[in-house]
Length: 441
Image 1: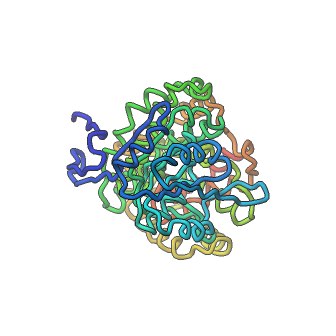
Image 2 (image 1 turned 60 degrees about the vertical axis):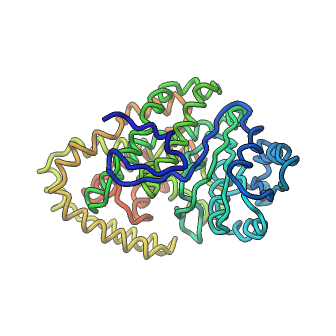
Image 3 (image 1 turned 90 degrees about the vertical axis):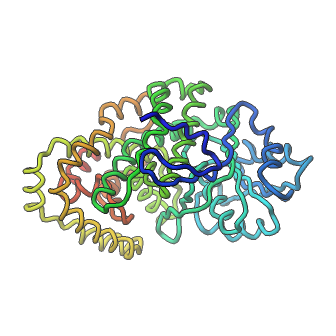
């Protein structure tokens, strides 16, 4: 099948050659080049009706891009900045406590510009969706793929939630700005982009058990771009603009893949749950996140790769034996622990129903999983080498996570979302604890 040029369908709907459903991409403009920020007035004039613009940023991203946005828009628009601050020199995190102030400032505005990375983008998209106004994203770092996505992730109470929102109508990426981002944020984007094969494998895996529809298009649209930079990690962390441009384009298409799927599934599988779990623990303890989202995801990717490899060595008789003889107390332990610490009983109960379905269907689907799903995931040694070349953390201890918490995150993170991933199969077969032990020594 000839590959679809997804760039032709921005702002349009189309019939998918893979799943034959109709997809729509509300993102109308992806503009990525050196000096792109100076094109903001022209882009806004073509896409937005009105002159009143709010620029959302924090202290750091105001210096990186917010101030520049304000200056280039000042002649043609009524643009003002809302600079979020957490006080006490702490970092801004995507938490629902910021929404009242943002929503208040958005009254009477015709659009919002998010000048920032993950946190500012998620907060701005959610607020814009609530106010039913368009959002334009101006990335300050190539650190994640949510600039184009139709979801927003933030802490609500004790739970890290991912909720559907209208995506940005345009993403204006200035290559000078993102290439000068803190190097750890560049590494984070690189590590986050490695989740593609594992997230799509997890998505296809889940669809086999739930009989929901899987679409191969999200898996395909970033394949060529990923191949062009994935072995160029050393150039990326030396701020090679050509490689950063390719990585940023792949991250943007990763966000588009979520729009096509109607969920975060093509870009966020079990590897992301480990990162979310760590964020929830940090929030509960009123501390900053252990590390950047993408760097935490990179550790999750290593674990996911090892899990897929371990499962691929099992045959059907092994699966039947393990299902019959593995008497796990994990459900009860996780239920009590998560209920007590995070209060997410509803999500957990939904998950337990899914796990009952998984156990019943697993023997009948095993050969199909080995043939169609497991080969989608990259090998663990390959992933480790790629992350090592990028200077990303290879151990939880490198981001300040001790053995007990790391072991807990690997075993329990699968219970915080009512969706199936490779960690659920490994958990139900009793081998996830072995994998957790392997990565916490």
